[in-house]
Image (cartoon, rainbow over all chains, first blue to last red; front, side):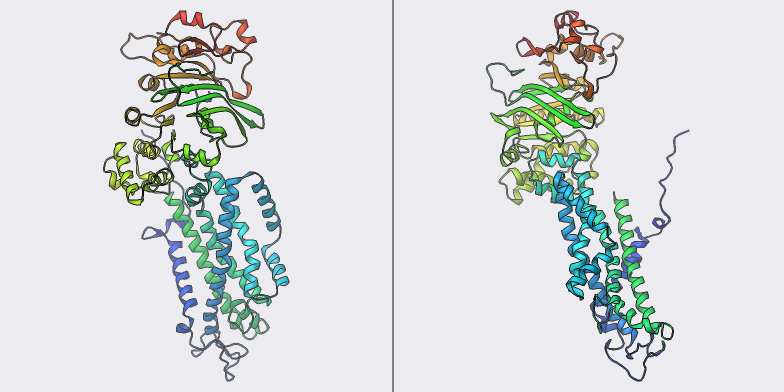
Length: 285
Length: 336
């Protein structure tokens, strides 16, 4: 008899693979690719001008001429949903990239330095996570005034903390490993050790979280748009559109529902892609 | 002071009263206690002891690689300058430039996400004036030197694509990139197969001759010491208990611990004899016994050994021992 090792247990999702890649990565990637194309060249796909009002078909139900119907100004909902990709994908990218960069740099430095820097950082983390993110962002936007730029600032002020926390934890683990000591023994500067050696080994969770964070940013952006604190009407933005339709929910549900579906699909795309990425990194290790 | 110095030469490395104390929740732990030794140019010194005797911490302390919360005191004179008191910039030139270090586990000591070429060239960039093309050529040369076949092709490989022995060769190649004058080796063969061990040891000795390096070899393997080292220092509970040339110590140990270690190693060729073992286990560094730390396990211990700690004393040319009863131990001769 010989010992047989049990195969490692894997989640049901990881069993679906396409060309060696996790299926989640591929599905998520396709959704994101489509979203990006729509965001960059919406006019190629939108049948109408998103701001053009057609007074002959106000609050028209979905039809062949207007597949998603029209809103209370007679604007084509499909065209508005498509054009909204430009703003909402922009929110996803702009609101999270700055925090990613700042958070990764701060997290790497804090994780490596430890001591006092770490204690101070820990208190900042406590302060930020003790509020729901949405409440904090609304409070900051309320002070700065509504609009997309102020929303980016408000999100950025808070969001970097989450990236920094992830990276500092990883760097703290990595800096105790032999190769970090080997780097010191080789006479490399702390900056070189942190950014050339530790960070590439520590950044994976932050990249995966970045994907999730973009989905969260779209939710946050459309929440603020809905509340009138983010993108301003008449801009085509999903949150703004949902707000536009909220008085007509009983009679013209399509005004709000289709932008809502767009939010769900895009958010799901980011989440699936992030999941697939995490899966890929795990198997690589 | 200098434990192993012969008067004629000046040592390349002189470690004086090196002490490392870790602050732990259970109180301070003296992992290294007033350790002193010298390494001559071109000499191979073996630092021997059981797990937890402080030999690896000694090596890391003298390179300034100990993490807080810990205090390192004493002096580590590298060609006259104290490594522990050096300004950061000078320290960076010495570390990796003049003094290189290789680690026990080559998998964790190499950066998993960087190609081998990048890791060798990085050391060259930090410690030489070579341009990019010369660095690449030198990287190939180094891999060739440490006996990696198809060096040019393997340059673009990642550490995980190498076997254990090959990884250690890569580690050595990186360490040698700057032509160091002293190589600190922290159990470089412990994680390897016996056959590979032998190759790596031979390689280190060959390179010692080629580069005229000194080597400090930390190991728990007396076979390795016998095969490679010129002198040895035996550590127990953070202190050096005996030092001298390998030939003298193997022939005539003066410390009961050394004698016990030697007795527990099987020897080929001789008649079949019983192996002896040292009773008990090494003490926890947090509760080192009063007096001589070895007394609870020592067959020679007398009352005096419990009351007072023996100092490391010179008993001959370059020969030191810390035992009140060294004469009796020596009289018993080598075990087996």
